Length: 395
Image (tube, rainbow, N blue to C red; front, side, top):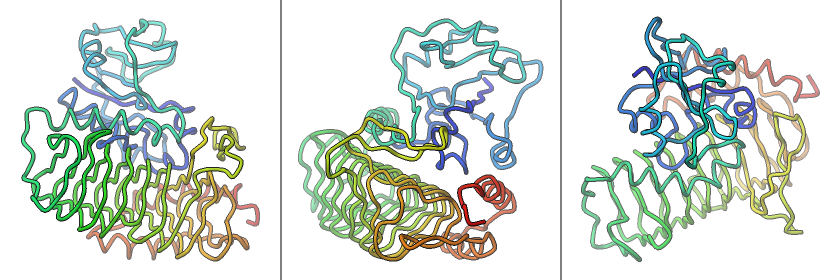
């Protein structure tokens, strides 16, 4: 089965700035990315139908003359949906409330008219439509991923120095995972510790929670679920209902709540974000779809930060702040609630963060993880820089 995960234009825009640098299916929700979920459920490899500037890094693999399975990249799989998809005959598909879910056929690319060949799916689906869905729906996705990854398997041993409140079988450690003198509470959901991940002494963790491969929860961290810390991260301080994609650090004290942080980000010591307005009203965030502020309908909404962005010590982010790609934020006071991509500064104003300077920093960051900033990634960043010029009004 040749699986192709399709981005639609509206969803891709609604998930910016996180999707500037990745297809929708590379969003992490729960423990796994959306692509990883589909690959595990269907026991196959997936490729991407995505924006032009991403295709070199995230190629598509059509099979001409053979059936391809096209799936909406913002939809999460579950057992019932997978059964329905596997029953599809060539030339047929599924939709939900008129929105595309899946299509199976010999077409070498998906076109909107094929939606006419899709029948209405009667089951419930979990999907992401807006950037804040990533943290609001993370709990359901995390519980589903936990069941998927741990079914029929035995956890690595949990040291007796730890305290478990609730069901002990809802704490699962992968090979090489370590935890000492920590407290795990599974009353509200499971706790998953990935391969070679470490929970340091004094940490307090309430599930549902995932600490993915090779990540570290630092001394005396306080975690409120549902929270996901992706692979190769270092996190300390207080975190509540947030998702960190991977390769990012919040290594020191400070509060992160109801937030989503992309890859290769760094939050300086004592960085804090507000997740609740003083008047307890709904939070509005900047929307790249409408090029204006959009009501989330949420009372709690914190920080959305795109890849490669960083902030200095004691940074204060106001409720519903959206930070683009490659921003470097520092200084006193509250910076604006929309911080464009590739800027340098803070509350007192911004200058352009030139690509050459940004590349120098990024290469140093990559070297710490034994990685290299490849030419294909530079092309992606160059495209984003050009496409976001209008947000940097001084240029």
